[in-house]
Image (cartoon, rainbow over all chains, first blue to last red):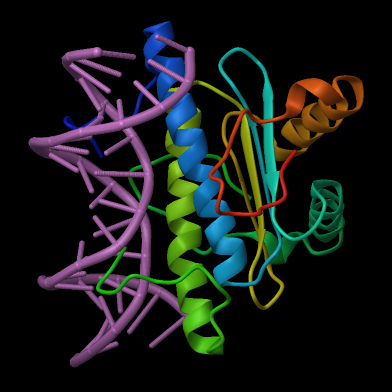
Length: 95
Length: 95
DNA sequence: GGCACTATATATAAGGG
DNA sequence: TCCCTTATATATAGTGC
């Protein structure tokens, strides 16, 4: 999305990396917010900026509550937390 | 983003709400993944589907580690966790 | 439920101030 | 750095299978 197709690999230039982080962080939070409202769900988003600062977002409930619910669910129902399928050409770590 | 502009409010139809959740959840995870790679950061995303199922994602590190780092940072540096600014016309809950 | 299509809305990379 | 613009890449709503 932009004047040029951006390859998904680490942006080596420090300035550009921080700029991209700021823009995409805002976009991500906006989309998390929209998802929480449209689908009436609980959501939590935790990010650390390239300089190590914490950014977090949660929808209807306090982030601590969402985290706690997540931890409990992962402990008590390990099989139910997996996503069904993702793109084949990425190798992100997921649960 | 689609044939029609969608107002950001709860989708009342159960089927449509679940369909929108599935599509947007995938989009959100993809963007979280891209952000983690492009900016070389830690990130964690926790969502509960309309039916209550847990979906979560984390980038380079285990989600438990990212959550723990977040909790510690929020406890020890409450002032540093705030985002600078968001859209004025939304009222999401953030930290 | 999921997958594919496609018209449209949205996000964003570059660049300028 | 941050804000604005704009061309372009991407996400996705509606639809059919």
